[in-house]
Amino acid sequence: MHPTSAAPSSRPPWWRGPEPGRRLLGARAFVTGAGTQPGGGPIGIGEAIAVLFAAQGARVAVADIDRDRADATVGMVRDAGGDAVAVVGDLADPETNRRCVSEAAEGLGGIDTVVNSVAVTAGSGSPVDVDLDEWDRAMRLNLGAAVLTARHTIPHLRAAGGGAILNISSIAATRGHGSGAYAASKAALGGLTRDWAYLHGREGIRVNEILIGHAYSPMGDQGGPEVRARRRRAGLLPTEGLAWDVAWPAVFLCSAEAGWITGVELPVDAGTTSTAPYAVSLLNDRDPT
Image 1 (tube, helix red, strand yellow):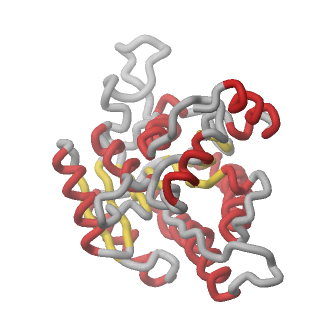
Image 2 (cartoon, rainbow, N blue to C red):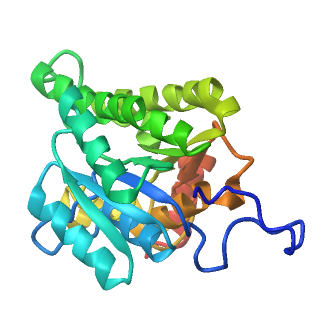
């Protein structure tokens, strides 16, 4: 049962979804790029979403290209008292994607929630000197895998009577960032978010997107402590974002509480995109810590 189902008539009219603290109870979620990165670094976005979804009552399919990484996240889910299955393969390959979705649907008893989180930062730089193989790799994984995942999961969402798709994007899609294919692929994902919301809204399928700011994650850890410090100071809040700060809005957007929200891009970026860069520099001048 998808968590957007109507509340029992015995509850007040403002009630949405299951009991508080179990906001995704009954959901069956397919989360891509959800494997645990080796080496004991920061938790990844997809990994955090998978764990928190399960803690909120969803059954979760942890999709990753690496078996050990997928199994590690499944272990985290079970340690948190949740239920998960691992599906392994290259989601940018059409047949492998179809197989992974089929295995997930069988393991979960259906799919009604989808999170497209898998991504790489390949293909950066000017078109003059960008590595075209890396460009193609980024487009294939960041954009192509999301398209294939939607292609193969939407029939399951239809069978469930509706559901939610959440695309994980980046503020790199909205401003000059020097990230080349990463920015282009994420901007394209935003266009697809709105298009899918239009195409499938009357089927009860909601499609939304989170634009991640400078959060500390395996991808956001690139560049070392100095880069992390500069990234933290790009926003309005004094703290550095973590993957959990993305996972909580993801819970909301896939829950019954967001049952009338579709086609939106939600920045989760400590206010970075809401403010002119020069204004942020003024804050940093006043508070150099």
